[in-house]
Image (cartoon, rainbow, N blue to C red; front, side, top):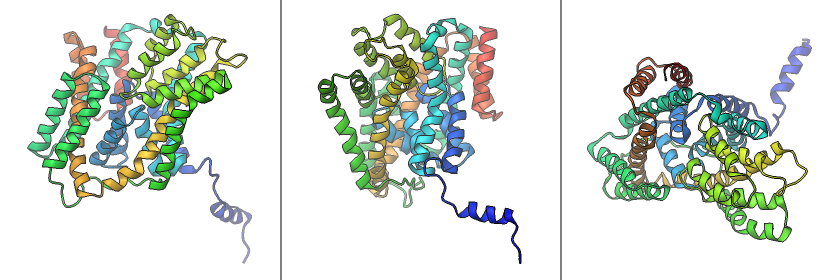
Length: 417
């Protein structure tokens, strides 16, 4: 019996090892997150709403309860919560390559825009039509409201959990600041552990990650080693690259609350030192509000805008890419350190009760954020509320994809306002 050469090629291709740096599953994850990176407007809270729509509602990768548990983990950790959520989802599907693919896909569009703006269009944020920006902000109200509505129906299944949610939302509105949010989640965990009776079987399906507890300890050691050691390395080497790595890594490692907290910390370190002018810094901040994807991409703009006194003779885009990587690196390290321990703890009934309180607490934080700053910063006139209602109906009842609702909202805002 003869074998056709085409059959030989198919058999060889099926048994040949796939490249470790680009498995097919990681490529698929890259394209999924690239689309999200192109369409996810509105900051970290809205990003989580987009993620829930994509991975809970559309693809069924995980349940609402597991999704909310992951949100709680990322809220506890320093760094950009939405990007860490993406890394965790990629990690669960395709290992470390999947985590890297998710980060690259979600970050690439905003990073390209921000670095390009620093190369010559730093005033682009002031040139964008006000109505278009307002339309985007109003649509974000509907996106977050839809997420709160859907998650609330599956998480707040009894009066106790609903009470925890309301208490967390009230505390978050009265106690401003990222530290207050962290304390609210911690308090909800304690309340849940004390008063919530977990079900015999956890509502959340197991979220497995290919990271062992031993590996988690190693990742934590790397995270702390860089955090504590980089200042000494920068002083010893007297290198612009080492100094930049220290400043941006330390900023990313100590930021709780997302990109909005990152901005003033960077400004206090870079502007007084004369590395970047205040006008350029604020122009980049304005542009960040208008682009999709993580707000941490602003560090690419800042890096590409640094004066030549920090690093000389290097292309601005390369410096921007370097500072972007340095800021995101601690978020990856601390996430890899935390996930294996979370996966083990969730098997404990006491831990499940605590996570039940955390789930309701995180939902309360999202509810509080829906009001302030999402609603109060976007809705000021009756026509604003009308557009928000229209976007909510389009998402919940007409089942239009979020990216299309965002696009239509921007167009309507540009024409109407």
